[in-house]
Image (tube, rainbow, N blue to C red; front, side, top):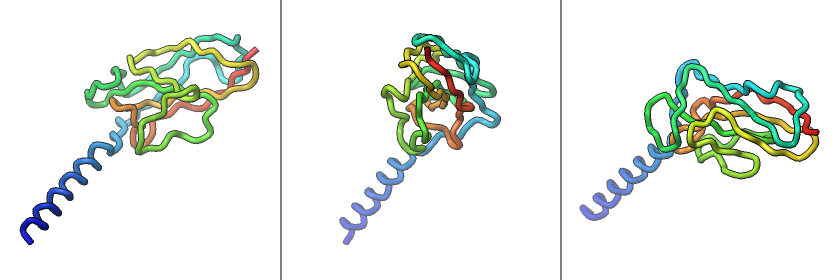
Length: 141
């Protein structure tokens, strides 16, 4: 019986620790991200620069666990925000800027595209609540 209780206690501790490891980082009060340029509705060439800004939160590279810091993720043509309990994907629609970059060169196909920023914590997880910019539309020539 003692062995069973010891194993149950250990399992409970491990489960609790694993849940804490994936808990979302609280968003700093008043934290905001925005796309500085291009402007919403702008016509842009196939390759263009997107500039990012933050307010009430600092930028830090991925892996830096300094409190109240994060790094940008550019969401391209994404209809639904990434899951709050998993790292933001790293693919053609979710660009990572884990070196705390404040701008990016983006290449898109001609047509209409949406752009939105989401700030991720040191482990690429969305903050709670998510820190996201207004979604903009660009027309690519």
